[in-house]
Image (cartoon, rainbow, N blue to C red; front, side, top):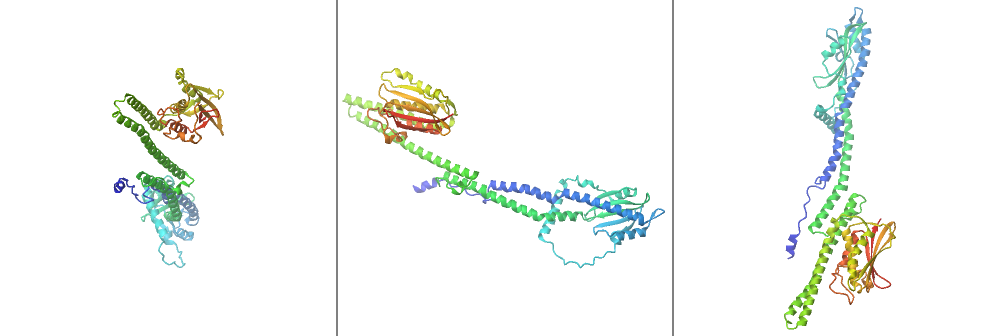
Length: 536
């Protein structure tokens, strides 16, 4: 039997994937953190705008140098004819002492090159060469990443800024300079290097006697060096992104996963409560969620236990009249000749049937009450008008012989108290209390219903009091009478007319309206039931 019960317990869901990447929230955290970082990295690697700035700056630098050099050549390397002194021009190039990555060339107007700084320079580097050294991993990785980013993203990179220097051939540039203009362009050499070139005319008075061309080919190296310099910062940014993602995962995704597993254990029957004190002690939304889940689980368990107890009580209460009916039916067969005893047994059966009917009706109302409380919308109720209307339904019973009258008194002096609630359940509260008071009142007695106003701190309270003239309630039973199926009635009161659920239903309805109900005995005799409801 025990083995069969074990087989019915559903298995807990298996843990899917790792704690980090097996969680969708964790993946979302990592993706969201790394997405912006990836954009930053790619933008830093591309450096398109920075490169464009380098190009424009290099062009301006070359233009300034070319202007100075052409002025020197126009003064020192020209003849009065006017013409260009080839030997003097070459000597001038040698004396310019140009930077290593800048190349100067001189052309005659017909396009013949008569001087090239790369071949005419006599500068010799006498410093000792450093030993050959392999580039470090960071430098290699930065260079490779820089080249990869440039190649992959070149088609989508904006070119507006770099268009400040036109892309044209040297021939086009030379033609502009020969006609006396200033020309600058960018192009790529046979080795794929980016070259910034400036060509300016060499003039004697106003005649163009030659063309000076300055070229710089160090732009790509500068950009590559800038990219490589960003690698340590990118590494730190990636590390920080991973650390923050891991912390967010541990602080959000993992606790939610623990809550999910705890809920699955309860669903599978492996546990009765969510026991996660480490989460409920947190002072954030996760802690609030854990506390709410724990409270919800405990409330559900209490409700399940209450339903189980209610079912047991129902079975017990139904069994008593059924047992009495069965005993009476069995006895009828043995007393067929005794008319008086037969009639008494039939009266017992009829009384037990009425009791069963009352029990079933009240049990049905009690089981339906919770669903109605969540389904019916709440509204503002004028409690004085509402109680007066409920009491007025008993006026028709006042003309019967020995009838118990019900009177209403408004002690609020016309104050309009509004209660947020549902008319159906609240009407059931008033009727149950009045019916209970009438059942304990002597023939010709009176039940008084009073509405009063009080305060609980800053909260206004509407208090409804129902008083009878009956024997009162034993002091030790003032709380017990609100339990389900409590039917301990004094001598002389009718038996079987009450199911013992009326006051239990009253307490349940009042609790859902954030109120409270209690019983007390009157000094002049009889019982008083008080209901407090928050009002405005």
